[in-house]
Length: 374
Picture 1 (cartoon, rainbow, N blue to C red):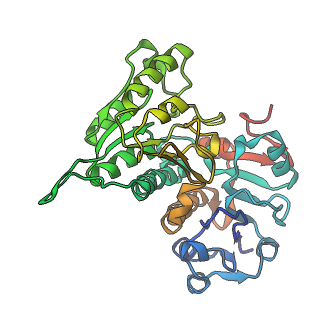
Picture 2 (cartoon, rainbow, N blue to C red):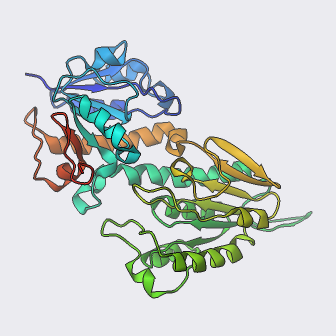
């Protein structure tokens, strides 16, 4: 019996990405898998219906028709309406596992086996499936471009007959995947870049990109990183010292880009109202954590706020603003996971596999992931 995969058209108004591209469809159909794509699913990401058909997919007029007989349903964000897949079918996407118990119960009630891509462990063999890295990389790049678009000066130093334009000063807060890409992009645009992070390992990475590192030196720094590579929440004393150092640094900056996130928790507050008001008029803050509460006290989701001439950019779903490339990377992340769980045209969900065990949220109507089942 032919394995059937459905690709949903996203229903969230702020989502332009798609879970499969003609490239990944072609690779899956070459294995004898049947692909059904909802018409228009890739339109906002510049992947027209005819390209999916040329790659071997069948088009469906709506999501319900696409998922009717599907064994696997692929999406970007958790569907706003319950997918009409068969009981036991797989739903794979970025399913927002930290959204709350009610959301998890809703996923369990679908009777689908739900795999959340945000939970892919950060181990070597799972790197090709790591959606947080693939999407954050593009977010960091785009954040700098959004900063440049809202900044009323140039980034590089320019020497002209009419005088010299000084380079912009860019401060990146959080040197994870998004932060490092922001540093690299700002440097390429000619800015003077500095960055901060609570993890000591970040210092070498920041400096290797040509930026200076701003950090409070303390014993607590040695335990500032989880085994999964994420930053831990620090003590109040450390936060106080770090805030003082950041306040001293921010006042000299033209651009601040904040990227700090802690999985399952509100984003840490890094830029206070007082810090914002200390910045020069014309300065720009881009808050990449705005959807999780924000790193800046005055950022607002989906808005550009002006505070005494300082613009605070709170763009919703930054990867979606680069929908063609972010979809291409995300679709490859999904393809690599599918290659793990499809064996000889059959679904083989090995619950002893570290990647599968970490990623499966619900099965047979129950929340089974050990991190969320209590």
